[in-house]
Image (cartoon, rainbow, N blue to C red; front, top):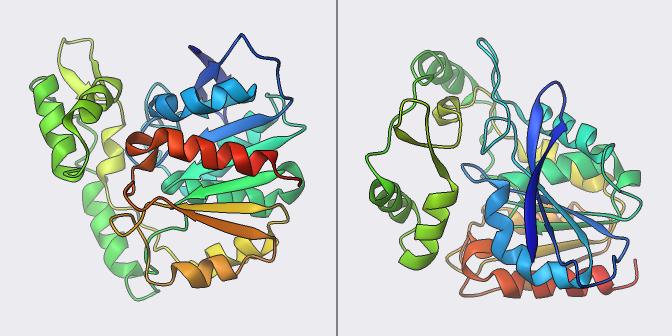
Length: 290
C-alpha cells in the first residue's frame, strides 16, 4: 500500500490529508473519507486503510484543524463543530466525490453526521464507528461550561512537552489500558513530533485541552440524523467501547436504512485494535446495493 500526504484547503485553513492507495488494483470509482476522533489524527487510519486499499477505493483521511499536520487557529480563535463541518464541506469540493462514503470514528462520527444531515445529497453511504456523540449534557451545564472555558482558554496555549517517546507511550497507555503496547508504540510515534526547539510534543493544538463552551445536545444531533438519506452502518466496539446511554434512541432517529455490526473485543479505538475487521465490515457495506 502506498501512502502520502497532501495539503488541501479547508474553510480558511490548510488541512493535512493523508492518502492511501493500492496501485496494483483498478480504481473502484468510490471515494472514502475517513474522519478521525478527538486527540487523534488521520494518519492513524493506516492499519484500516491497508484492508480497504485493495478494494480500489480512493482513501482520504484529513487531520481536522488543530490536529496532526493541519493548520491551527490563530490567536483569538477556537475550535467548534461547525468549523470542522465547514472544513469537510470545502474538502469534498476538491476531491472525487461522485460516489462518496463518509466514515467517522467517535468525534469524527459526529462531524460526519452533521455533514451528512446538512448535505444529504453529497453522501452515498455513511459509517459511524461509535460516532453518536457523548452523553446528553442538557442546558443546565451551559453556564458551568462557559465559566470553565473562560478559565481554560487563557491557560492552554502553551504545549506541554513530552520527555521522550516512552513518555508519550505511557500517557497513551493511561487512556487506553486495554490496547497492546506494540500498537500504542506506533500510535505514539504518529501522534507526536519534534518541535523547532527540539522538544517532543503531541501534534494537536494545546487549545484542544480546554473545555468546550458548548454543551452537547442529543436532540440537535438527532435532528441531523433524521435528515440523512443514505444507508448507514454503525460499528460498535463491544462492551468496552463507548456507548452513550441513549445510543439506540439516537440511531432510531434515522429514517434511512441502517444496520449494525458489533466487534465485541475491539473497544472504542477499533481502528487501532481490529483494523482489518473494521475494513471488512466497511468494504462489505460499500459493496451492498445502495
